[in-house]
Image 1 (cartoon, helix red, strand yellow):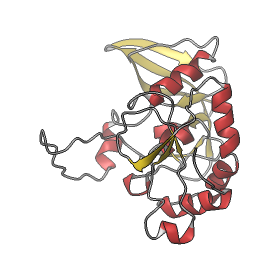
Image 2 (cartoon, helix red, strand yellow):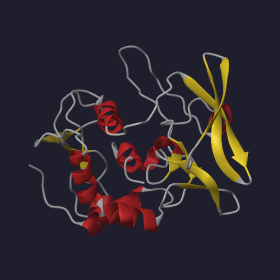
Image 3 (cartoon, helix red, strand yellow):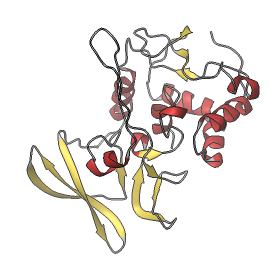
Length: 237
Protein backbone atom coordinates (compact mmCIF):
# COMPACT_ATOMS: atom_id res chain seq x y z
CA UNK A 1 0.00 0.00 0.00
CA UNK A 2 1.05 3.59 -0.58
CA UNK A 3 4.31 5.05 -1.81
CA UNK A 4 7.45 6.79 -0.69
CA UNK A 5 7.42 10.15 1.09
CA UNK A 6 9.79 12.30 3.11
CA UNK A 7 9.35 14.85 5.87
CA UNK A 8 10.94 17.52 3.67
CA UNK A 9 8.55 16.92 0.76
CA UNK A 10 5.55 16.99 3.10
CA UNK A 11 6.87 20.17 4.73
CA UNK A 12 7.50 21.88 1.39
CA UNK A 13 4.04 20.98 0.10
CA UNK A 14 2.20 22.25 3.19
CA UNK A 15 4.27 25.45 3.25
CA UNK A 16 3.31 26.11 -0.38
CA UNK A 17 -0.31 25.10 0.14
CA UNK A 18 -0.98 27.19 3.27
CA UNK A 19 -1.99 30.84 2.63
CA UNK A 20 -0.07 32.24 5.64
CA UNK A 21 2.17 29.36 6.71
CA UNK A 22 3.51 29.14 10.24
CA UNK A 23 6.85 27.41 9.69
CA UNK A 24 7.20 26.26 13.31
CA UNK A 25 3.78 24.59 13.35
CA UNK A 26 4.14 22.94 9.96
CA UNK A 27 7.65 21.69 10.73
CA UNK A 28 6.45 20.10 13.99
CA UNK A 29 3.38 18.61 12.30
CA UNK A 30 5.50 16.98 9.60
CA UNK A 31 8.29 15.80 11.90
CA UNK A 32 5.79 14.12 14.21
CA UNK A 33 3.37 12.84 11.54
CA UNK A 34 4.27 9.15 11.88
CA UNK A 35 4.14 9.28 15.69
CA UNK A 36 0.82 11.12 15.39
CA UNK A 37 -0.63 8.34 13.23
CA UNK A 38 0.73 5.62 15.54
CA UNK A 39 -0.83 7.40 18.54
CA UNK A 40 -4.24 7.44 16.87
CA UNK A 41 -3.95 3.70 16.23
CA UNK A 42 -2.95 3.14 19.87
CA UNK A 43 -6.06 5.06 20.92
CA UNK A 44 -8.21 2.60 18.99
CA UNK A 45 -8.92 4.66 15.85
CA UNK A 46 -9.32 2.09 13.02
CA UNK A 47 -7.47 2.39 9.69
CA UNK A 48 -7.47 -0.17 6.87
CA UNK A 49 -4.25 -1.23 5.16
CA UNK A 50 -5.58 -0.08 1.79
CA UNK A 51 -5.32 2.82 -0.64
CA UNK A 52 -7.80 4.65 -2.85
CA UNK A 53 -5.79 5.52 -5.97
CA UNK A 54 -8.14 7.95 -7.65
CA UNK A 55 -8.70 11.66 -6.94
CA UNK A 56 -11.71 12.20 -4.71
CA UNK A 57 -13.96 14.80 -3.14
CA UNK A 58 -16.59 12.76 -1.30
CA UNK A 59 -15.51 9.13 -1.25
CA UNK A 60 -18.06 6.56 -0.12
CA UNK A 61 -15.55 3.78 0.61
CA UNK A 62 -13.32 2.93 3.57
CA UNK A 63 -9.81 2.79 2.07
CA UNK A 64 -7.17 4.47 4.20
CA UNK A 65 -4.45 6.22 2.17
CA UNK A 66 -5.72 8.88 -0.23
CA UNK A 67 -4.67 11.71 -2.52
CA UNK A 68 -6.49 14.54 -0.77
CA UNK A 69 -4.86 17.70 -2.12
CA UNK A 70 -3.08 19.19 -5.14
CA UNK A 71 0.15 17.24 -4.76
CA UNK A 72 0.29 16.17 -8.42
CA UNK A 73 -0.38 19.53 -10.05
CA UNK A 74 1.80 22.53 -10.90
CA UNK A 75 3.49 24.26 -9.11
CA UNK A 76 3.47 21.84 -6.13
CA UNK A 77 4.86 18.88 -8.08
CA UNK A 78 7.84 21.00 -9.15
CA UNK A 79 8.95 21.65 -5.56
CA UNK A 80 7.81 18.57 -3.61
CA UNK A 81 7.64 14.98 -4.82
CA UNK A 82 3.95 14.04 -4.99
CA UNK A 83 2.75 11.49 -2.46
CA UNK A 84 -0.64 10.47 -1.04
CA UNK A 85 -0.69 11.87 2.51
CA UNK A 86 -4.32 11.70 3.56
CA UNK A 87 -5.37 8.94 5.98
CA UNK A 88 -9.07 8.15 6.19
CA UNK A 89 -10.58 6.41 9.19
CA UNK A 90 -11.95 2.96 8.34
CA UNK A 91 -15.53 4.10 7.95
CA UNK A 92 -17.69 3.96 4.84
CA UNK A 93 -18.63 7.42 3.61
CA UNK A 94 -17.88 10.69 5.35
CA UNK A 95 -18.36 9.61 8.96
CA UNK A 96 -14.69 9.00 9.71
CA UNK A 97 -14.38 12.11 11.83
CA UNK A 98 -17.29 11.07 14.02
CA UNK A 99 -15.79 7.60 14.42
CA UNK A 100 -12.44 9.09 15.41
CA UNK A 101 -14.04 11.32 18.05
CA UNK A 102 -15.99 8.34 19.37
CA UNK A 103 -12.74 6.41 19.85
CA UNK A 104 -10.86 9.30 21.41
CA UNK A 105 -13.61 10.41 23.80
CA UNK A 106 -14.11 6.81 24.92
CA UNK A 107 -10.63 7.09 26.44
CA UNK A 108 -11.47 10.34 28.25
CA UNK A 109 -12.64 8.76 31.49
CA UNK A 110 -14.31 11.07 33.98
CA UNK A 111 -15.42 13.62 31.37
CA UNK A 112 -19.04 14.73 31.63
CA UNK A 113 -20.74 15.64 28.35
CA UNK A 114 -23.55 18.19 28.12
CA UNK A 115 -25.34 17.99 24.77
CA UNK A 116 -27.28 20.70 22.91
CA UNK A 117 -25.51 23.33 25.02
CA UNK A 118 -24.84 26.79 23.61
CA UNK A 119 -21.80 28.38 25.26
CA UNK A 120 -22.33 32.13 24.94
CA UNK A 121 -19.80 33.66 27.35
CA UNK A 122 -16.33 33.04 28.70
CA UNK A 123 -15.80 33.70 32.41
CA UNK A 124 -12.69 35.72 33.29
CA UNK A 125 -11.22 36.09 36.77
CA UNK A 126 -8.01 37.96 37.59
CA UNK A 127 -7.07 38.11 33.93
CA UNK A 128 -7.52 34.37 33.32
CA UNK A 129 -10.32 32.47 31.59
CA UNK A 130 -11.72 30.20 34.31
CA UNK A 131 -15.01 28.92 32.89
CA UNK A 132 -17.96 29.32 30.54
CA UNK A 133 -21.65 30.24 30.70
CA UNK A 134 -24.14 28.21 28.69
CA UNK A 135 -27.79 27.69 27.89
CA UNK A 136 -29.61 24.54 26.77
CA UNK A 137 -32.61 24.97 24.49
CA UNK A 138 -32.81 28.61 25.53
CA UNK A 139 -32.67 27.94 29.27
CA UNK A 140 -29.75 29.53 31.12
CA UNK A 141 -27.73 26.94 33.01
CA UNK A 142 -25.32 29.29 34.77
CA UNK A 143 -21.55 28.92 34.61
CA UNK A 144 -19.16 26.00 34.72
CA UNK A 145 -15.71 26.43 36.27
CA UNK A 146 -12.73 24.94 34.47
CA UNK A 147 -10.18 23.20 36.68
CA UNK A 148 -7.22 24.04 34.46
CA UNK A 149 -8.29 25.74 31.20
CA UNK A 150 -11.10 26.24 28.68
CA UNK A 151 -10.65 24.61 25.27
CA UNK A 152 -12.72 25.93 22.36
CA UNK A 153 -13.41 22.88 20.20
CA UNK A 154 -16.76 23.56 18.54
CA UNK A 155 -15.56 22.28 15.19
CA UNK A 156 -16.23 25.53 13.34
CA UNK A 157 -17.76 28.96 13.83
CA UNK A 158 -20.92 28.66 11.71
CA UNK A 159 -23.04 29.76 14.71
CA UNK A 160 -21.00 32.91 15.31
CA UNK A 161 -22.81 35.73 13.51
CA UNK A 162 -19.95 38.20 13.96
CA UNK A 163 -17.29 35.91 12.45
CA UNK A 164 -19.58 34.87 9.61
CA UNK A 165 -20.08 38.55 8.85
CA UNK A 166 -16.33 38.91 8.29
CA UNK A 167 -16.04 35.94 5.94
CA UNK A 168 -15.86 36.21 2.11
CA UNK A 169 -18.84 34.76 0.27
CA UNK A 170 -19.39 33.27 -3.18
CA UNK A 171 -22.44 32.30 -5.24
CA UNK A 172 -22.60 28.60 -6.13
CA UNK A 173 -25.08 26.74 -8.29
CA UNK A 174 -26.51 24.13 -5.94
CA UNK A 175 -29.45 23.16 -8.14
CA UNK A 176 -30.80 19.64 -7.69
CA UNK A 177 -29.14 17.40 -10.22
CA UNK A 178 -26.44 19.96 -11.00
CA UNK A 179 -24.13 19.95 -8.01
CA UNK A 180 -23.79 18.92 -4.39
CA UNK A 181 -21.86 21.20 -2.04
CA UNK A 182 -20.89 20.69 1.56
CA UNK A 183 -19.87 23.86 3.34
CA UNK A 184 -17.91 24.45 6.53
CA UNK A 185 -15.68 27.19 7.89
CA UNK A 186 -11.89 27.17 7.93
CA UNK A 187 -9.46 29.33 9.84
CA UNK A 188 -10.36 30.96 13.12
CA UNK A 189 -8.55 32.18 16.20
CA UNK A 190 -4.81 32.80 16.16
CA UNK A 191 -3.17 30.17 18.38
CA UNK A 192 0.33 29.25 19.47
CA UNK A 193 1.96 25.91 18.62
CA UNK A 194 0.61 24.69 21.98
CA UNK A 195 -2.96 25.75 21.16
CA UNK A 196 -3.04 28.86 23.36
CA UNK A 197 -5.34 31.58 21.98
CA UNK A 198 -3.26 34.63 21.08
CA UNK A 199 -4.74 38.11 21.58
CA UNK A 200 -4.40 40.97 19.10
CA UNK A 201 -1.42 42.36 21.03
CA UNK A 202 0.46 39.08 20.52
CA UNK A 203 0.31 37.57 24.01
CA UNK A 204 -1.46 34.35 24.94
CA UNK A 205 -4.76 34.65 26.84
CA UNK A 206 -4.24 32.74 30.12
CA UNK A 207 -6.51 29.73 30.49
CA UNK A 208 -7.89 29.76 26.93
CA UNK A 209 -7.09 27.26 24.17
CA UNK A 210 -8.61 26.53 20.74
CA UNK A 211 -8.30 23.51 18.47
CA UNK A 212 -9.67 22.13 15.20
CA UNK A 213 -11.97 24.30 13.10
CA UNK A 214 -11.96 27.01 15.76
CA UNK A 215 -8.23 27.68 15.30
CA UNK A 216 -6.05 28.89 12.46
CA UNK A 217 -3.21 26.40 12.03
CA UNK A 218 -2.66 24.72 8.65
CA UNK A 219 -6.20 24.61 7.23
CA UNK A 220 -6.83 28.36 6.92
CA UNK A 221 -9.13 28.77 3.92
CA UNK A 222 -10.49 26.95 0.91
CA UNK A 223 -7.63 27.86 -1.43
CA UNK A 224 -5.07 25.93 0.58
CA UNK A 225 -7.15 23.11 2.02
CA UNK A 226 -6.26 19.44 1.59
CA UNK A 227 -9.05 17.14 2.69
CA UNK A 228 -8.23 15.73 6.10
CA UNK A 229 -5.93 18.55 7.17
CA UNK A 230 -8.55 19.98 9.52
CA UNK A 231 -9.18 16.78 11.47
CA UNK A 232 -5.50 15.91 11.34
CA UNK A 233 -4.42 19.13 13.02
CA UNK A 234 -7.35 18.99 15.46
CA UNK A 235 -5.87 15.83 17.00
CA UNK A 236 -2.31 17.16 16.90
CA UNK A 237 -2.08 20.76 18.11
